[in-house]
Image (cartoon, rainbow, N blue to C red; front, side):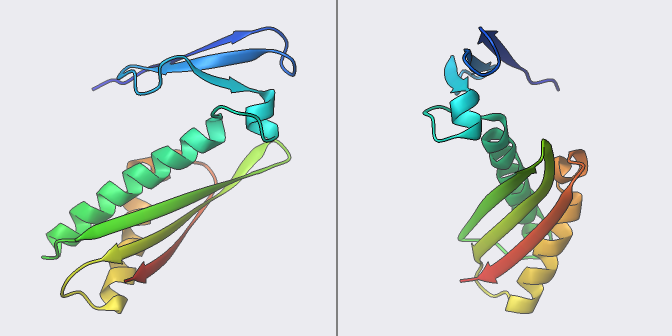
Length: 136
């Protein structure tokens, strides 16, 4: 399986702008710029997309792992915060909340921590990765 995305940039790094298009066209010439990356400009940015990829992959992996343990989640919600420090992504923080009938809080946390290490995107990222898990 292969997936792809295309970035187009026009102009200088600071004054220019670009757009991103994904194979599925969920992103279709979606605007990004210096201001959307390093200030409060409108548009997306690579770090936001990295956070979305990690949250999405992790949530799906956790769901599969809970299923393997005999639990069917009603809902899993994961927020991912990416820290960019001096030009380096240093941290990906996963904050997960789950509604999972029949599971103990301790078991949920155990599986949530294991999922962090087994998530494909976690394996890709070369930074510290943390998980905070809460059963709701």
